[in-house]
Amino acid sequence: MSTRSPVFKTRPLPRSKKEAIDLMMAQPNLIRRPILVRGRHVVFGFDADEYAKSG
Image (cartoon, rainbow, N blue to C red; front, side, top):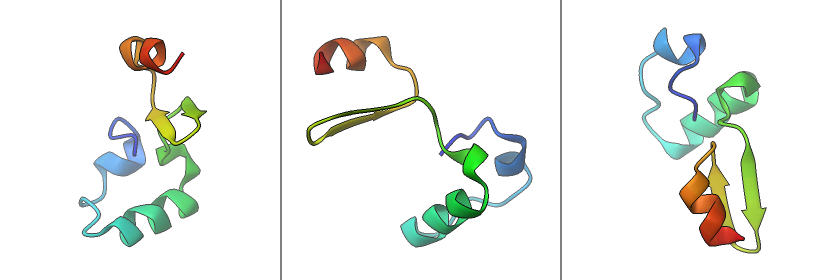
């Protein structure tokens, strides 16, 4: 979840995983991008070190 989003800053923290997912479904701009998926490994947001490990 993108904590830098203005929507996130105006709301209290989600209390559960379901609440966080529901919020991201309603406000897609809260989803951290980019998302890298390699098999079972997923990296949310840009992280050069994690990208190098996945490659």
